[in-house]
Image 1 (cartoon, rainbow, N blue to C red):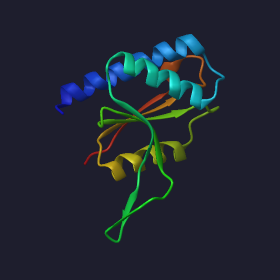
Image 2 (cartoon, one colour):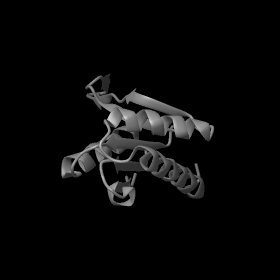
Image 3 (tube, rainbow, N blue to C red):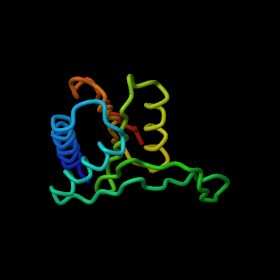
Image 4 (spheres, one colour):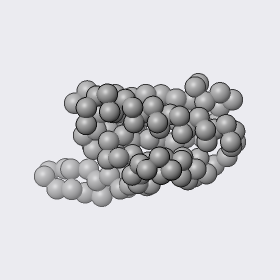
Length: 128
């Protein structure tokens, strides 16, 4: 996927996230935001997988370690959804680990538990 296409897809994800946040506000469960965001992205005709298993490769073997990607959009962008008081460094580390394990370059950490969603969005780039 070309960089422009990836950025366009990222913009669509953010536009849909703003729509969900405007409708639901803060204070819901992560699963509610995940379900509604997936619905909005599907309305755009995008392929979205929820709770995608992400194995680790260790000693040449794929091992299931319990990692799950909240939303995997078009096999290109990882979206991790939070509904927490504040994003912690461990949340960013989680997304970066998912990007490295999946060999993807772009992900979003979106915390819906904020008054203004722009304050809850972290764009994370994995320089492959």
